[in-house]
Every structure is written in C-alpha cells, then in structure tokens.
Amino acid sequence: MSLNTTPSAQRVHIGFFGRRNAGKSSLVNVVTGQALSVVSDIPGTTTDPVRKAMELPPLGPVLVIDTPGFDDEGALGALRVKKTHEILREADVAVLVIDAARGITSADEELIGLFKKSSTPYIVALNKSDLGNAKCRMQNAIEVSALTGENIYELKDAIARLAPQKEERRLLGDLLAPGDCVVLVTPIDAAAPRGRLILPQQQALRDILDAGAYALVTKETELVSALARLKMPPNLVVTDSQVFHYVAGVVPEDVPLTSFSILFARYKGFLKTAVEGIEALQNLSEGAKILIAEGCTHHRQCDDIGTVKLPRWIREKLGRDFAFSFCSGNEFPEDLSSYALVLHCGGCMLSEKAVRARADAAAAQGVPFTNYGVCIAWLQGILERCLRPLDNRY
Image (cartoon, rainbow, N blue to C red):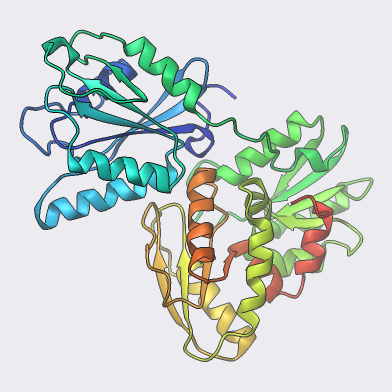
C-alpha cells in the first residue's frame, strides 16, 4: 500500500511532546520537511494537536503529531494538556523535546513518567544545541537544532529504531484461499459518505485481492439477486453490522457469515475481549450506565447507529432501560468506574495501540468492553454463527 493511500490507523504514530517554547513545532517542521506547525516566540502557539502523514525510512508510512505545550496554564491550558494525554494513548513512539539551554523541567519529568507508565518508547531531543550552552545531559538523548538541522537525520534514525515491530495481521485474507469468492454487503444510506466506500470496506476489498480471491460487492437490497447469479455459494459473506438481521435471513446457514466490525476487532487485537465483554450485557440491571464510544467523528443522522439504533436495540432485546453516554474521535473518559459496560466501534480509524489502550483502561477499572459487531450479532442471536468463520483465530 503506497504512502498516499496508507490509512492513518495503520501508520506508526510518532508524538512530539514537551513544554511551551521548547521548539517542538520547529523540530516537527524540520523532521517532516514542511511548514506543518505555526512557529512563534509566543508561548502556547500550538493549541491543538497537528498531524502530518509522511514517509520515514526505514519505517515507511508514519503519522507525526505535534502536541500543545504540556506546561500550559489556565482553563484553556488544562484542555490542551488533556489533548496531549489523549495523543499519548495512540503514540507508538514519543519524542520529548527539551530546550537544552534551559534544561529539564518538572513538566519534562512528568512526561517521562507518563511515557514509562504507558510503556511508550521515547527519545529525548535536546533542541537549540546551536546556542552552545547546553545545561542538560541525560541518557537516551540526542542534541539537535531545528535552526541548523544538526543531527536531524540521527534523530530520525533513532526514532526508527525505537518503533515497535508490529505484528503482521490480515483483516480477512488469512481466512481465504486463492480463487475464493467473498460477498461484501455495503448499505448505502444517509450516513454513507458520498461517492466512496468507508475504510473497512476499502481495506476488505484490498485484502481479498491480495489473497488471490475475488469480491462481489452489493447493497443489501440487491443481495438476493446477487447470490442468485453465482453458480456456487460464496466462501464468505461480510456485511455491515447494521443489516445483520436481514443478511442472516438471506444467506444460507451453511455459508460463512461475519461483519466488518467483527473483523476489525480481530484485526486490532481485541476480539477476544469483545466476546467476553458481551456476557456482561445480558446481566445489566435497570438504569446501568453504558458508554458507547466511536473512534471517528461524523455527522449524526436521524437514525445513527451509535446514538440511536444500538440503544434502541439493546432496550428492546433486554426489556430494560439504561443510561447511555457517548463519545467520539480521540475523546475517551479516563475514569470509567461509573460505567457497567463500554460498547466500542470496530476502531478502524484508530491505531491498534489507541484501541488497546481503551480496552486495557476498561479492564484495569473492572469494566467489561465489547464492540458494535459483536453486540449486534448477539442481539440478533447469531453471534456464534458470525464467529464460526474465524475458526478461533483471534
């Protein structure tokens, strides 16, 4: 997959952290080779995380993230610091930028503590080395200058060495043999993006082709006709979870069936957790709090899956009412103790580390964690069937 088409969630995420005016934005601009972040002598110029997709040999496609100053002040500053915490959850590698002339501060020490607590590999960039009056000497550090470019290539190499080797996973290609036929059911409704398929559908198509198999893509309204045109039953049917009930009724029982959301939970490494978490849903008491979390942000439609359909289906299935809360994008509560369950999307727009951090945070606080596809399959009484094609490979 090329640099320009690699989804952000599949890139190595590199976060640049530090206090205000340490030169983070200047260093990010030099590393990326572009004027990505606004640079100013005024402290606190970077107010929100700034992201840049780029190629960093030998890592390949990466996502560089410039964060607000960690020592920011006041109510607005507290919000910026919160954003920095959110970025740390998804960062595969952290770069701590320190003003070498000023030396390490309490804010820097706190950041190092957060890196260690989150098991995030990090390197310290002692910036402004061109001034020649460094007051900071420490391990795991390299002197650099955003102004002169000193040791920038060395910094890139150090980042590349720190990046964790990600386990090679397939979305569904490992479930297929060359020549297999896969039917992808992709509803086109008011929530569908205009003129394109959503990311899970795109990635499924590519993985099917890479496996030497072929795909038949159809809306649910044409599914009966599409299946009738096949001389032989498909080897696998993958559907959007929202139309599980209809598709399960159309696809013969002996034809393997699953959903994009279930495949993505497996791909991101938390399907086992999601399956275990669904057991808690069955036993929730009246009024229990459920957090419904999505990794992306989109315009809410009148029959939105997360805020409308799922709460309705859960109430109808269990015959009880619950207190639903919602979050989306990079926002995710640190304190989950008041929730009886976290119900998450497939996480296609989040890095694996970000999704696992959310699942781990829930586990650490004793809160069950499941996802849309697993939940909807269970609500429709077809969870066992939809896990069967995976043959316990999760």
